[in-house]
Image (spheres, rainbow, N blue to C red):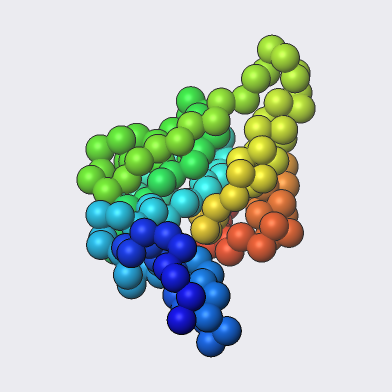
Amino acid sequence: MPPLRGPVDSPATLRSSGSYRARRPSAVDLEPAMRQPFRLLLTGSHTWDDTHIIEHALAMMLTHHPEGVLLVHGACPRGADAIAAAYADRAPGYHSEAHAADWRRHGRAAGHLRNAEMVTLGADGCAAFLRGDSPGTTATIRLAKAAGIPVWLHKQP
């Protein structure tokens, strides 16, 4: 048997050939406090006004992910983003990651650029709150699906 190449407590496994390879600890191996929070991308219409629907969806997400939820949102001052951010700020188990659009630098394209950046950063899931025909929310849903991010769509007439 070859000599151990790393510290005895390293997460290595012995292959049949006698060489070692790193093994990434699974979620089962980790204590709950060490698990990464579920990364939830939120997209929604600026005119969304049903607080109960958003708060209920976010509460249900936390019951499925007791390790915590990191809410990634667009930092909009009204609508779905504002409702969700306010909930995350007061709900234990939630953390918030805000991505404000740079309207001064990018003009009318700022919202779409910000949404594309949030999708590119990756997420474990996307909660979408669509009211009417919101082009930004619709585009973000499309980008998330194309990136392989599961989307949970909530609609409001």
